Image (cartoon, rainbow, N blue to C red; front, side):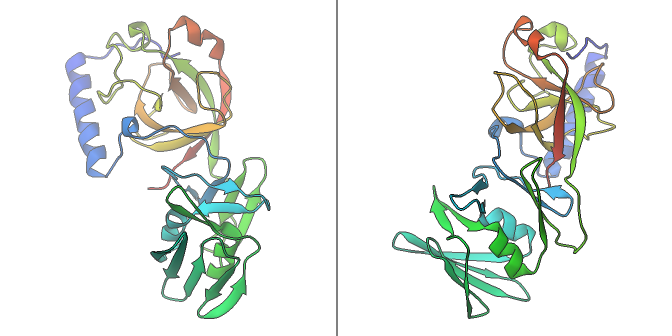
Length: 269
């Protein structure tokens, strides 16, 4: 748990304001406007995990990785144009080398006007177009590797082989009890209300304001599988590769969390 730590209240407030302004200037999204969500499948481009804010990759019935089109193709340098045609979506992807066209629900596509077959059809769900990741990687000429231990697909855009970009941390949990928050009550270091998605970190290891994805924990009060979090808090006992997860509930109810080993991924901006 986050231990009580003594800081001058005025100094903390000024420092928090400075950090908040710096982060906001860089386009940081407050954790309290984002939802925690687990990913069945994760996608990494080179050394950066892709953030899927409202639509997650998944394995379809053919065991192919389907990814939300826009988030991946933007990282690969494509511009995206799509048009609705009845119940289907026609998508055109363009970069300085190729033009790719496909229709949701169909296994046929074209690359530079040459027809190609997909192993599995692209899909249109909840306002998002999903495309087989293997097709994208092949069309873009980008090697892809699969890390089964983390359900992670790695796109080696630079042509080099990359390892899964996570670190193993020790994790604890803390509540809104003032005794766990330096006497300041239910706010984080940056002055935001504590909420699901808040984590306390050592800023010398993880910069304040960082977007992270964590998994490997086991606790009923947290989303199953994993979740997106934001490093907006600190703690006197949070040093090195240690992370403290805020969980709504009483201090006593969180004691069973103990100390757990988790995986921590940095999210690309």
